Length: 381
Image (cartoon, rainbow, N blue to C red; front, side, top):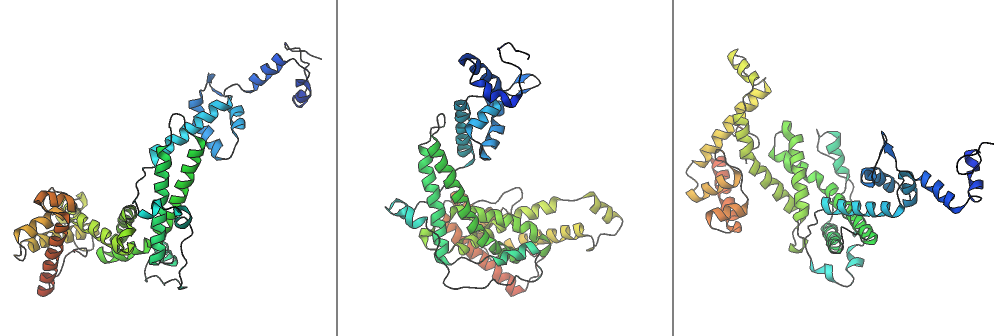
């Protein structure tokens, strides 16, 4: 038989298990080191940091640390520390924990009561039929049952309590030497919080469809629903159940305010837009309502003129007109401002801004109704 430099006879690979016990310790150590050489690319030995993305994939697929260490030729302790630091980095960098505090969070039995399943709906309601003409995706939203006020309150308390617990755990996390128990708790809390949030979202997606159908024309419904969904996500993060309001009321108001605030910007953008195709159509005398771009451009120009006419109609005083212009960004080159920003501008509280805004919009609605003014744009407030 052939003999190698280590004094081992050349046998089949599967006979190595029988050989290893018969060789000296230093030779066994040498063979173990050969098995754990780092993977290389074009002859370059990769560091643990370079292998880390593949290590994380293997870890999430359930491989043991020892198996990962053997595959990448690293010490098990190095693999463990690298994976712990990467898990800590992902938590810290990607989860900005903000929660609405509640007195129930500090009670002795908070975990047991708040993290319990939500109460069942005493009324077994059958799914509502969707409105006619909706695409299949939007129609499927009506198969998700609506939440009762008790279920809604429980889920929002649960969602914020999970983030409250996560904030406490995160404050104890040492990013340079993270503890696996704290990381496991944080990842579990994040998964539970995401699950609770998704339950709230699914139960309220049809609300977005219902509100946007009243604020935008049919040809803009898909884009409008996408905008409304983003507002819904922000509303979920800011809703405080301790105030006693229903979330549907809060979310509807948030969606409407965001839509009305963006109306002025959409109008200005549409008025500035002039495509080459429009110029060609106009020069050839074929600019008509059959051309959707031209028709939309003319409609938005007319709506901008009507908004200006309403503001100058005389039913509003100077302060009301200025607040509407500030809130909805109706002047050239300006952007919509929040209640707080508008209040600071005029030296009043944001609640007073809300009152003046509501009164001014009421006056304009009455003017439109009394004079039976036809509105050029379907999404005029």
